[in-house]
Image (cartoon, helix red, strand yellow):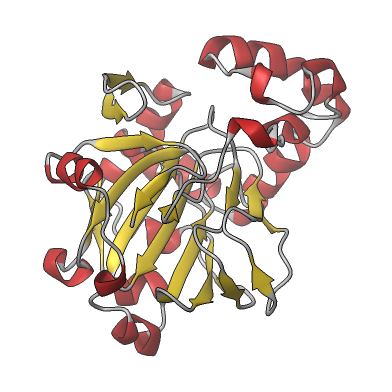
Length: 292
């Protein structure tokens, strides 16, 4: 399976093949895989166990091959490969500040492939690589869903080769995070395109509300996936947050960040909206302007 996305920096349409393609096909397309291994793999302790393996010093031997096979630009990293103490230490590496300048207006919270909808009520359900769910299902909070039912919706999908720290897209005061319990499922397109309903709702996820003067309340919801489990928040809640300030990071695996913003207080950049209408993601970097 190949995914198309537009590289905003170059304007080129590029293609992505998910890592561990054969395993994902088996788990999400093969009936035997669905009925047996998937039943175990979705369980929390499996993700935690694998995550712990990625914390061991011996896991550093995986870094060079990972960097080489996925073409990761290590010139952006604050550390050299030899300085990392584990694979996870590398995976949620910090970047040199100058590699991710913070733009004007509303900025991307991370590196990844972006879909954007001007009004979530117009689409009724979120369509992400063949999977759909309602706002109420995603937030698991009827009152919050009602409050944001006409917001603009942005979905940023991180691939394993992406920078895995995420940041605040605007300045304001951030609440504490609200965790939502659920099973762990991969955010891979194979998982999303399979017959498993409410894939995102069954991932580990949480949200915080960023209260801003200019844009009202912004919901920021990180989503963890299979082999991730770890959503680690690094900010201090209930104090003023600057745009571009780090919010947290994901441990090993692909992950997603969902944003809800008052549609009357943001103009999402037209190229992103157009690509979304054409069912193509737009590759953006953390700090890059995505709306005004």
